[in-house]
Length: 195
Image: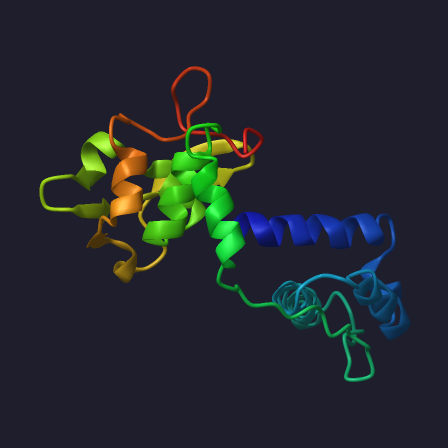
């Protein structure tokens, strides 16, 4: 995912400077490029700046350019800051009310009551990962995407492999379910486009 994110950023940079030799790009050009990132998150802008800075540093070290246009005078947008928030009571009620009416409801309940990330939820298999007798859920792996293709992976961190309690509302939502909660028409892991 990290590689793909940086590859997409590099493609954006290349599309902005297609056909322009690196030696002719100046600090004003870099400022204009960064200004196109208005509305992106602080994290995205920081990563993009690191990528562009690193690229020009390498070009300088390889003797392709005599100086880097990424200087302290280059203006960079602040980016948007956001942090996850807890769902409001009416939002939780809406998820629960959709349980018998929407195919995504059990998956939403799993994320709401077990705190699973999207990729962990997509890899979740009721038959394998729920112990109804002990009242526990086991998180073992996650789905990551290569383009639109879903692939199984270990969770992001060691702490990602975990056992968590099965709360009653989630028990009711998962009871009688089998296999993956969300699948393609052929029964495989949901693709990025399918979401």
